[in-house]
Length: 139
Image (cartoon, rainbow, N blue to C red; front, side, top):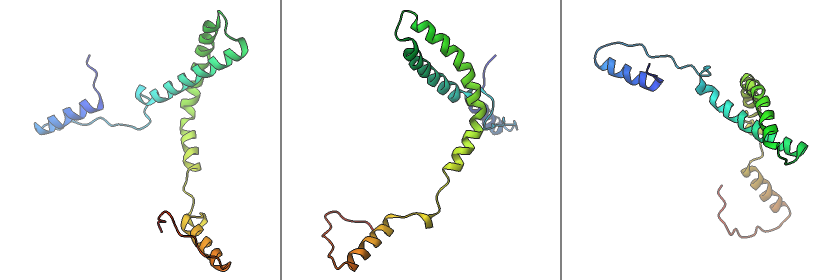
């Protein structure tokens, strides 16, 4: 049986429409449960748990003749727990990161122009002269 991807099906659909046939394109769903959508989480949790178990095994047991066997046992125990936990919590983490990264309203931000204006006002009030600018200031 030949595997088909979204791209090959889309190309077949374009060819069929050019030939006068009307084929229905497959629907691509974001967040699908395909292996492709799980792959970043699989790789990330695998790598993080691999490094974490190695560091903790070295701290607890030190380097010995059975280090690699104990490390692999710990990793193969931790990774099947870490992956589902990370994959299930992914929507919550994404929502939380979007909430935390909302832009700050500009009226509450002290920008470069406001700092330059305050500096010029303070310099003028104190009767000091401005030093010559060595580099051009963009205003």
